[in-house]
Amino acid sequence: MKRSKKRLALALLSVAIVPSVALATTVFFVLCLLLVAGLIRQAEAAHIVCGQTLGPGGLFVLDSNVGPCDDPGPAIEVESATLDLNGFTVSCADTNANNILPDGIVLIDSKAVVLNGTVSGCNDGVLVEGFRDQSKHRVENVTSDANANNGFFIDADGVTLIGNTATNNGNHGFKIHGDANASISNRATNNGSNGFFILFRKNKLVSNTSTSNGDNGFFIDGDQTTVINNTANNNSNDGFAIFSGQRKFAGNRASANGNNGFAIFGGNNKLLRNMATDNGNDGFQIGDDSNRLTKNVAENNGGNGIYLIPGAFVNRIIKNVASGHLDPNFDLRDDNSGVTCPNTWKNNTFVTKGGSGVGCIH
Image (cartoon, rainbow, N blue to C red; front, top):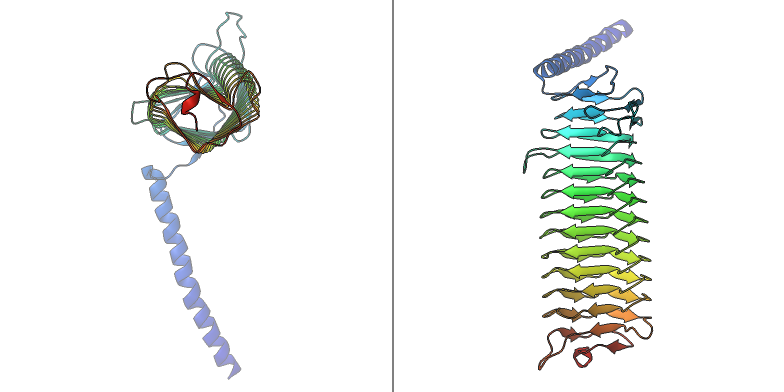
């Protein structure tokens, strides 16, 4: 009886094992076919050196630092492939003393990716190029430090930047020169010019930080840009310098910048729940028409809290809070007047008001 039970158990076990082995064999065979067909990517283990082009296609992982690299050409070019820096650094230096530095990592064609490492000492640290409306490159968790020009130069459309850091670069931390790019949770610190320099249309800036840069925290010149939950602190000029219009600004903070917290020189912008505190000049300075400021806060700035300079008309200033702005400045100021009020002020909370349009402020 015991022997029969043992035989039965062995038989059941064999029935269970055989399909499992067969399944594992089948899965392995299918994966091999996909790999051969190029439908899945295999990491390239070859040692990467200065001047190398990676791709088209493939996944490449650094096994050591690369450089210092010198011209001609970029340190590494990535063509429609993925480069995982794996915590290592790509560096440049003018080893031939011709006063020319190469760019660091250059992404070309479309859908190239670079992530997880550092680029330093190059011309532009990371340069992203590609077809307009088709590039779809991605740069993630990369630090671009002490490059002669820009930390990151995006000269393409549809690029995604996530969790990157630009520090100590000679020009801009992030220069975005294209449409429909997304900058999410990036940081710019101690760069020679602007932390973020944004041109063209339909770009998105979400949860970025710009600190202690030589010019503006954020310089934005392009319509239909969305700017949400960003922070600009201790920059030499404006926290946010805004040109052109049709933009949405919500939940942004500007503090202790050398000039204005928010300088708006474009029309049809919507500013909702932003905060400007302890800036050297005005909290919000409005120099164009048809902007709407709602539920923003301006406190303890060196100039005015919210100031509509001469020539700024048809703006709506509603339900904002301003306090702590000392004589000869005001919490709210409008230097525009007429037979009827050229701007609408309603339901604001403040202590002092002034300007030629003072009678219109409520």
